[in-house]
Image (cartoon, rainbow, N blue to C red; front, side, top):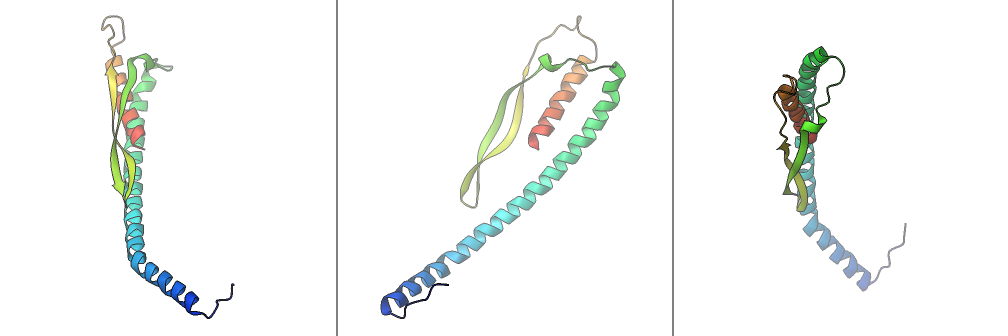
Length: 133
């Protein structure tokens, strides 16, 4: 620990530092509280989205396995845009996820199996839930 000099200049320096700490400490504590509240909110939202994703995934896996093998629907599901907005937490600008947009890919109703519509819809829903995580 450094030894403090007992001079007027040193006393003034310590008084100025004390004034600064007393002025800025409440603001820093408020920012800390805001960050803690936001972290709790994000953790709650994450667990909610994860539960919803797991639940929907189990539903989809129940009927996807009926088709045997892995269906190739990746060419029919394409992400066109990921929508982000600017948010502000405790004075810091951050990007906030809003939505995922998909392009509508045209395919022949006569040449594709009947389950493709349901599979494309299910994959888009799963991707949307997964992107929220």
